[in-house]
Image (cartoon, rainbow, N blue to C red; front, side, top):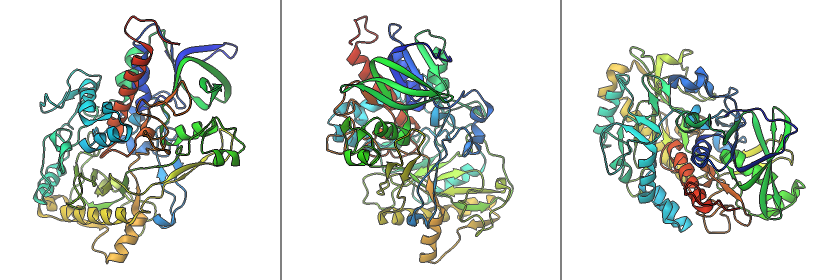
Length: 534
C-alpha cells in the first residue's frame, strides 16, 4: 500500500528497500511474498500512474522534467567543454518508467566476467539465463532453452514497426551483420547481429515498467508499504550493523528501523552518495567533509561507467512517419575490431532528429524533429572510467559526477568506426526511399570528424558500476551483495556491476533484483515456513 507516515509513530520494519526503481521494485515484491515480514520501500519520486510514463512513444519528453533526477556530468575537455546530461528516473519504477523500453539481456561474456570477479557461479551466464527464464513472459519466437513464458515481465517485439526498419535490417545485413529474429537469443552468445529489439510494451504504446510488473499486483498487501516522495539521506549504524534509515517525506524528517536488513537500490549516483554520507567510503575523502568514518571502502563512487551514445547520424525523411511502439524499433550489435571477444558497438534507431545542444545549430537540424530520423552510434563496452564525489556533508549538497566520457583513446577509435558504419548503412541503396538527404555529420575530414564526435557524444542513460562486486581492495560488495565490513546492509542496483553489460541495462537490473531476493530469502529463511533470522 502507498501511505503517508504518522510523524509521531515509531517505524519498525524487517526490510527497508531504499529506492523504488527497477531493481528495488523486483526486490520488494519478492521479499513481501513472505507474509511474515514487513517491507518498506522508500521512493524519492512520485506515482507512476501518469500518461507521461504510460505512453511508450513519448519517453524522450520526460528528460529534464520532474520525472528525471536531472544529473549532469562535470564539464569535460574530452567532450569539448560540455556538461553531459545524465538522465535517471525519479518516479516509482525508476528507469523502467522513463527509459526507451529496450529489453537487452547482455552478452554471455558479461555475466561470466561477473562470476569470475566475484568467485560466485550464481552470476554466471548459465545461472543468469535461468533467472531470465523466471522473469520473462516472452511473446516472440520460441526458444525453450533461453526464453521464459510465465514470468511477471511482458516482453515482446514491436508491432508493425515503421517501414524504415525493414530497410535498415536489409542494409545492415548487407554490411555483414546478420539479421536475427531475436536479439536476446543465441545472438547474445556470439559476435553480433541486427534486428528489432525486444521491448516491454503492451499493445501499441502501453509501457510495462517494473512498478507495473512487480509492485502493483501486490500493492494491497498489509506487509508492504510503499512511501513516495521519500528521500533517503543516511543509513544509521549500531556499532557495525546497519539499523535504521534517515529520510524525509516532502522535506519532513523521519527515521525507520530495520530488524533484518537495509538494501540500497538508488542507482549508480545516489547509492554511493548515501554510502559516503553514512560514513562508508574513502577515509581521506570523507574526512575532507567532516564525515565520521564507519568503514573505509575506497572503491565507493569509483569505476563509474556508462554507455556512450552519439547524437547522431541524421537523415531527413522523404516522407515523415510518426514514431511507433518505443520510437526506437531497430538496433544492432557488432565489433569495432574483429579481434574483440564480444560486440562493443550498439547503434540504435531514434525515430526523430537527435542532436546535442552543441551540434544542432551547426548542422541545421529541423526545428520539427519528426521530419528526420537518426541512427545513433553507441558504445557498450567503454574503457573510459569516471567517479562520483561529494561536494559537502549535507544530503542536499549535490554530487560531482566526473563521467570522463571519451577519456580513453580506444573509445574514440571504436565510436569513429561506429559513425562510419552508421553512415554506410544510412546512405546505402535500401534506405534511399526514406532519405531526402543526409543532415549530419556528412563526410568530414578525420580531425573534424573527431571534433564532431566529442561535440555530439553523450550518454545512453545507463549509469553503473560505482559500488561494484568483487574481491579486491576497490570492491564495495561481495558476490552476495553485502557491503564489506558492515552487517545488515546490501546493495542491489546497477552500481554493483563490475563492468557494464553489453546493451541496455534495464533487464540486467531486474536480474540483480531477483538475485538479491534469492540471497536474502536464503539468508533469512523466507518463504520456507522457518523462523526468520534476527
